[in-house]
Length: 118
Image: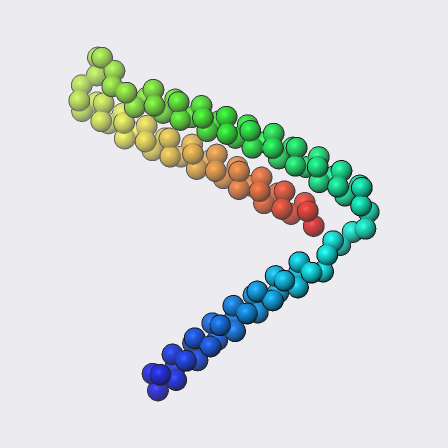
């Protein structure tokens, strides 16, 4: 009975994989939904430039955050060992939170630009 169960699971997984591949091929083969040629291309180009500007802004924010993080992680002359380690822990948490926010904005941009293509 165990062998039959394993075979059923394996064949059903293979079937699902094939259905998934064929559905993506069918969606790609359907072609563009609009025939308004130049207007659509101009619209997509405008969105690409806007997305590139946003991407550059996010990259700049990330670079600035990394520089600030490096400065904050260095030990200060008046600081004791324990205070330095406590400040490092707080700074690591703050840095991780800022990077998550930046990544969330990038994901939002990607989702927004993906939904505007339809």
